[in-house]
Length: 118
Image 1: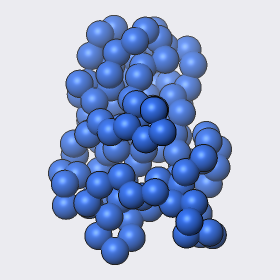
Image 2: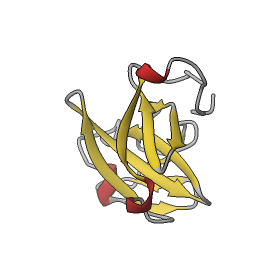
Image 3: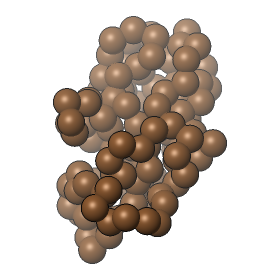
């Protein structure tokens, strides 16, 4: 299920960073509530996933982003950042992705969102 933004209670949304700080085709790491997360900008759209590969501990923000697919820098597992789905092993577990939106020039994550919240 895609990780698209939801409308609703604005208090549930937390600022991640200014949108201008997220370069097109790039991934950036950030922390929220103790979680290691990654924000991506692809074709002007923003996506947020966990930053840790589900196969072994590696930061995906150190990996290669090609279109909407992030490749882990260690064992080259690949994930679709729009859905979290595994595109290529050795990972077998999907990546968590979160509701994200751009508002007033800032990237925001819906606090408490979980995979499938869209």
